[in-house]
Amino acid sequence: MDRTMLRPLILLLLGASCGRPPPRTSLDAEPPRLVNAFFGLDDALPANANLLCRQAAAAGKDGMPVTFSRRLSGQPNPSAFAVTTRSGAVKTPFCATTAPANERSENHTVLLVGDLGGVDDPPVLVTVTGDVFIEGDANARGASVAVTPLEDGPTLVLALGVRAADLDTDCPASTKQVVVAIWAGGVTPVDGATQETHRLAYRVTTGAEAVTPFALGNLNDQDNYVHLCLDTDVEATRVSAAAGVLVDPRRDVNPETSVTVSR
Image (cartoon, rainbow, N blue to C red; front, side, top):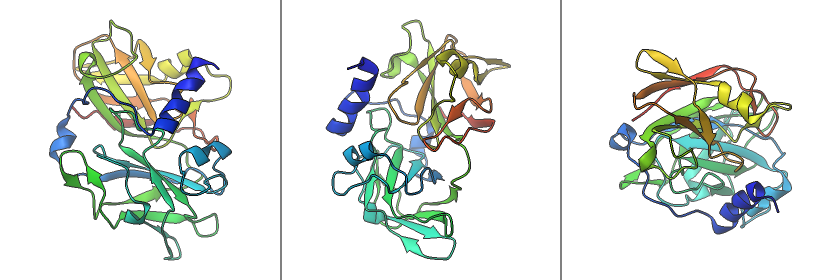
């Protein structure tokens, strides 16, 4: 088996990977909030989604990644989430998991699986109605966010700037700083695009200039995290990505997108 395929499979089966404690940012001093809910798939989760939700078959169900501003401290209960549709119906997912984005330095994103609405009555709001425990003895109960519609492409929803020495990363050894770019959902390059095309799509503001990462890390693992490897110590403050480079699992193409880098 190709090593790039083996790594995500191991992560799915183990539930989470170990690693050093991730570096803190200013977000860890703020109350946790939901930054995005992305209606990624409608009745279309693939067969391998059953590895994510062991308690029930996930294949053919709806998939909605929701991203928090801070890392979860464990697996949440699906009953802690309420999905409200346009008609006012309230749906409860049957599965909520941080996999596959559950490496030690990840865990911001929860995949909700179930009947969460559809084309005729789409989901419009996600609310945390129960306990969702966050690292640092915090609780996200009460957080809510509007849902990104099914037909929209993926956008950047969070970015964390850290010293390369403080993060478990496969960026090259010469990397001085990593911007952890977090997308609304899992992304892959559009058909025909290369990893180089993907790399050149990013621009990171550092001081008075914008730079392109000299390499990318944390690729080919089926999640929504990309490590932007920088060769400068000047603090990154914002990251942007050009339109038309990445697609979500439904093959919707990303628009031009940018987000502030938290440190």
